[in-house]
Image (cartoon, rainbow, N blue to C red; front, side, top):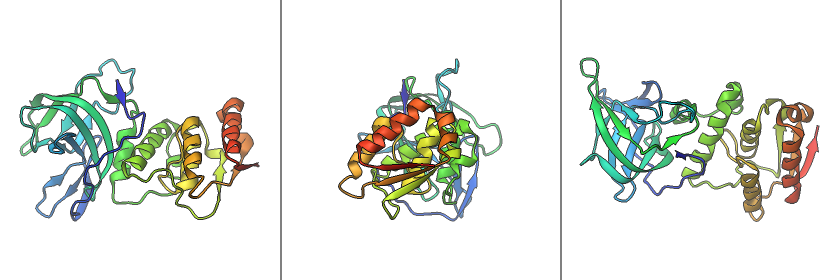
Length: 282
């Protein structure tokens, strides 16, 4: 089973005191350095019912994986620090992604989670790694961990940053944008001024690229405005009474149609026109 295909909502507190200096560590993770040189983790396992943090970790291995990987199974929490792990089991756990300000920016619903065993650190002063079982739950976007690391860093996201990455990252970027957008309870309201958006067709190398481009055009860097045709229709419908999208200027339309295919492009235009959006293909 996989998680992350739908936006996940959480009612966890997201504001915590900031620290001073952020540094990157581990393969998929980041930490922040306190004045006393202790590390603040990027990942938390928390019990959904009691709202208690069970364990914190600096990195994670085996969760953001290709679903065709034959070695799917346990997940390793690197640099783990147990907070309230108790018997090493939770019937209803969540994985939290935490940024450098200690804000929860992403949530994955894990369900039954248990500690399998611990691995001692390899060097002097190294923290232990906790090997856990999520009962087969993983995230099907293998590069999402790297994207989360970027989103959790102190540097603000930049317009077009997703397009600077290879196309293999675009699906994971869209997943992170969707999960972060709804975890923050922002919904689908457009935050840009005006009633129209411009799309750069030359950056649409696949369907995920299209939705990354549309989300950013509608809601700025890291923005979200649908991840499939049904979600696009939902975003357009939800916006009708608030700030409706009236027009789309689609630049380099022929180039994007070549990559996306006539069928998908036609369906997108049909959905836009269904909600009275004027489409200008250039």
